[in-house]
Length: 444
Image (cartoon, rainbow, N blue to C red; front, side, top):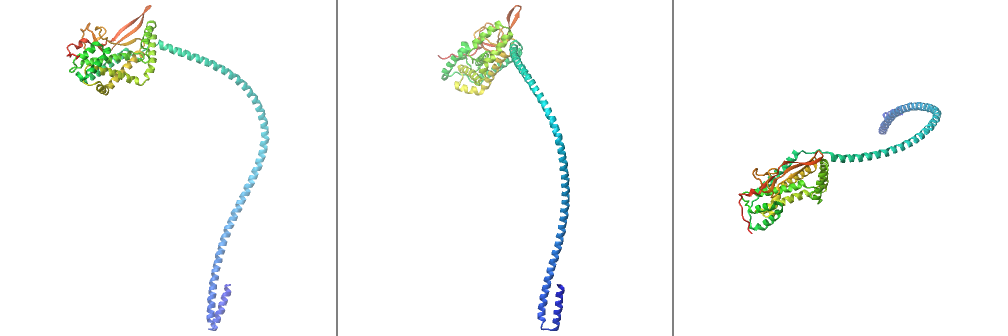
């Protein structure tokens, strides 16, 4: 095609050289031919690009076909291997099937034999189970009998043991601690209030004397209402100690804190047991009875506060009867704020002694001792709280510190007797303590 175009150009050029008339037409024709030539060249370039692209695609397709052929070859090989494997597996399966039939036959024979053995074992197990049940029943009977005998033995041991959990020295130490707490508390109380009988308090003083008369006795009541306590409240302190000691003694000795209303009955029963049984039995009976008699009462949360309130009220009434310058309500309010905790400690210490003497000591009987108001002073059984030794035959006013005695039932040949020992003498104040104290007459 290019050659024909070139040929035309030469002929046209020749025509141009032959005449000017046709020059313009030839130029246009040449221009047109040049455009066509450029277009043909562009198309030729495009065709060349297409050819190159087709060649590249052909190469790529060739490579793909080659790769596909290779993969096809591999797949054919894998297929052949799989077919060979399946054929081998089929042959193996047939072989195993035949062997399995043989094994199944042997297995069925073995299962039959095992079933026979199982039936025999079941029969044997049934027999053993029956024997086991009979053995268990017998074991249960033996266990029940053992538990019964154990409880009986435990109960017997409780009554046979004579071991105490605290010593006599420890009990004496607890009594000393209680006496010291009472002394300090009552001294603080008497020193914390003023005493001067006022006319406006006459009714309260009279009522107070009436209330303490049964507890403290006529002599103490008379002295409190006649002795002048302004300068020295010693007699007030003694009266407070006497009341606190008496209340503590009741706590230590009580069987049930009066919760069962059986104080006298229990004491009478115990005295009878002491006279007829050994010390070990009577001591354990006392311990068990006190423990169980107090169990319900001691579970009450207000028991402690009730006892603290009762003794506090008694101490306050004593101060009112002695002519405290404050009214009962004012004294009560100040007293509970300042001394409520100390009175609570006294109650706790007395309750502790109740448990120690009543439950933890069984080899003997211990009890707190005191001097009875009005009885004659005896240096063999009591001490003067002032330390005087020449006080024989003088009447006792009140007890200021508890003592402690011990009684043990002992065997003397064919007879039994009680051995008494004074471990600690009580301290008492005598009526003579008021000798020389300033007195005043009570207005009618």
